[in-house]
Length: 225
Image (cartoon, rainbow, N blue to C red; front, side, top):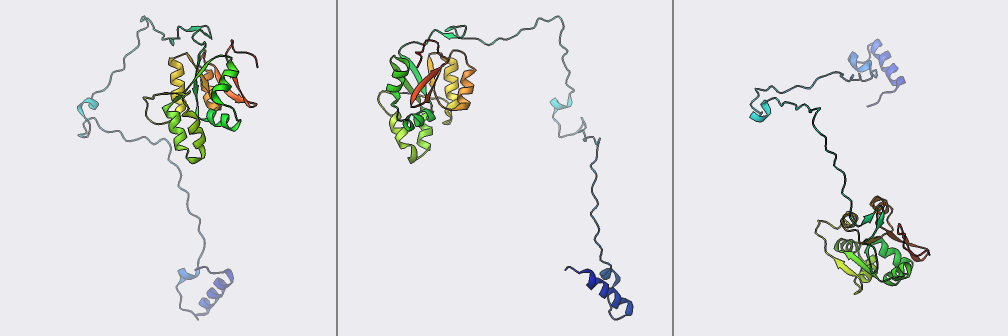
């Protein structure tokens, strides 16, 4: 119940006159700010005693830190590069080209009204074998009825399906892992994040959709469009 200043002064005046039988704490209503709790600094956490029964026998023993030997020979592990690479030139790439298709590449191809197989052949002037992984099919199936045309396109007899051994339907990690192990693929995608990850892998070209046609990058033998 809120009491205004005028009402409070009136009640105090009546109390002085003896007209009201109120207690003093009811009249002297003042707002008092809450005291701020200061944060405690330099407080050490309590350590469990080594004789505590909750500890196991292995934890009661003090672990000895092994000092590194200054005379020991250090071994630096370098990443193993594929034998198909001559510097950054990939010698395994050649007709017929094997192209891994990402989910959004199919959607962009339909949006730009470009046939996947004929567009790839017009881009590279050679026979192309498009591949679709099972995780890409799973992504398109999960997208619902809106992308049923894209699902119908990848079920073409000219597009081959690759089995996946990993769990889930996340396609980006699957494509990056396949391209890292096997250098014979071209990745067809319009995803910026996936492009950024593939550009870090040497010798792997990227195909994307631009101006109603397919464009290839990072491939020295590709024809200039």
